[in-house]
Image (cartoon, rainbow, N blue to C red):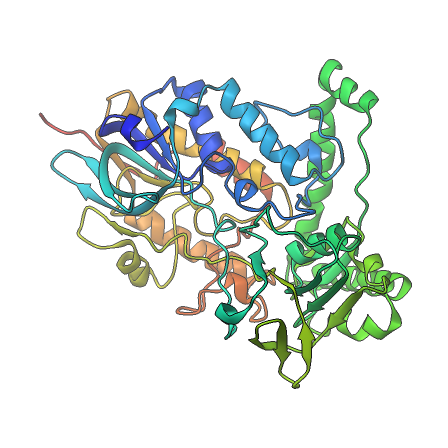
Length: 504
């Protein structure tokens, strides 16, 4: 939908973000609360979020297919155990179509800010058309931030990018017109994206030179094909897919134990380290062993499941691994810290994402901005990951400390959406005009999550991705089990909320 065709200026609900979080929220508003008066805005041209942004060769998920679809819209025909991006995006679009969400969506739109209007008990939401640069305002009763962290690429800070004569592409902003055939390709980074893209392009490129810093925890994997017989069984045998989902969920849940700061957790981490080491020694060239085996504390580095054969790919004559930082980009080459020059026709940046999804200026009912509120709390916090005191009718899906790190993000999304629906139902049914979490509950939850995180390895300094540099607090990870998440979002009472009835 274009802005000229856009929705009226007032909506009951505005959803910012059209990834899985925004998709699940929109679907459940219609399914559970029978609400059709909502709009979804996103920077991209369509639904998909990270799966719309990340379209590099080899892009896929490292969570089993059975768990990577919404419970109310299960997908029975994924072609492999770890689906690739094109299948996931196709699934997302099929859910959009089946739930008739197209008319609710406006793309190429950036969220600029929002401010609470106490007189009307509504949010004024500032937005910008990315085509024209024009800013405009929409009003809503309920504002839901479904903004994710894995769609805006982390820009390169390496000097000289403007001089490079070839193509520079980021894995999170892939240019499908760029040809890699018979090209000398430089890949900067060694996270999950780089691990997937290198095997996918190794046969096409003339030469690949990958520059890494510290090694990841590489674990063996295999992307098994799901045959038509299994697909038919999932579709026609009642309860089979649900049973498979439960079995895989329970298996993945055992991984939470390895992140605990106790003897059992340490033993499990040591076992994974030994498994990773053996996998590298058995499959990687000896000259790269020292570059691939982690030297940091077990648990410091992200687990990378090698479902696409990255480690095996390093045996190819045209693939080279370098532990020498790139310090400058020239017209047709890159210069490293040691003074070596490596020729390049194409540079691929696998350098992660810009974690600025909480930077948008939001002003609450007490005149404080979101940043000021978090400063008063000592870090980026949200009650039960979804709400802040002083910000009525504002909710997060995948907000602060919502990341699980071991299981399907979709499971977490569905739980948080369910809690939000329980909280906002009185607003949509006109029983109350606003709802916000109690300040005391927010503060108590903040202390509880800090104490729980101290019992895990997620506060390690080496895990800088999770740590707020300003406060030293972990803003990303959920420290409890998925069972506890389910209970606190779907079963626990709603005594922590303040309801206000506007007197007309």
